[in-house]
Length: 259
Image (cartoon, rainbow, N blue to C red; front, side, top):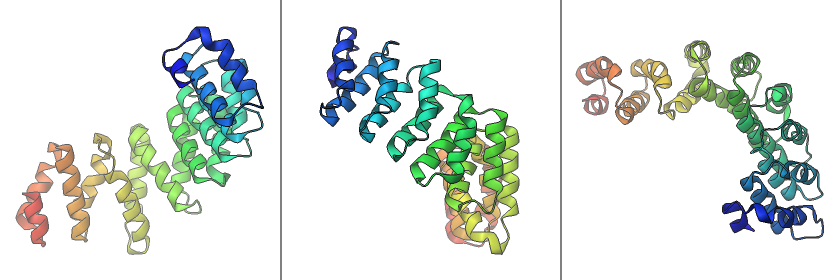
């Protein structure tokens, strides 16, 4: 079954469709068959996968939903949005990934609800990624507001913060830079450091203005982390800061690393 999908065996569509729709067939076979239909990519498979996305087994539903993410059609998009309401975590997470792949703008309200209230971390994080992939004004505004909302769970605020930096535009990054700086007070230090850890993992130029703020941090280990980012990314625009640290930093370890 896996091989049929890999070689895009159009002649096997009827066979694979039959396996997917056979509720008495083995779970693994049905899952692999759904995946194979997705890889073959024939539009006639959408109806089969749509029906499988509401079948009895959550694993089969998840595989069908995942496969639907490869079909850019109105029916596939509708099935993905519908799968966000599935009772099981696997189809919901698969739906969010499929929506991201197809950039289904109609899904934005449902994704906002998933980010705010879904009980499963994988679904909430996949929904944040999906909103960033869609990238319209409503999606960006929601993510920025969510990152800024102190009442939202910290782990998801940090996730939203990260995608706004990595995938957002100048306006989104400016808003997140303000958020980062605003949390620099001692009482907000744990959240500030969590945000710092998040953008230090982004090896893209977009993170540079955030990293630059860390060269003056009171904690030498934070300064070392900023230097490591510049070194890893060969970011020459920070050479002046690195030279300053190499000449005048209070910590010998920072001086040596900056050199």
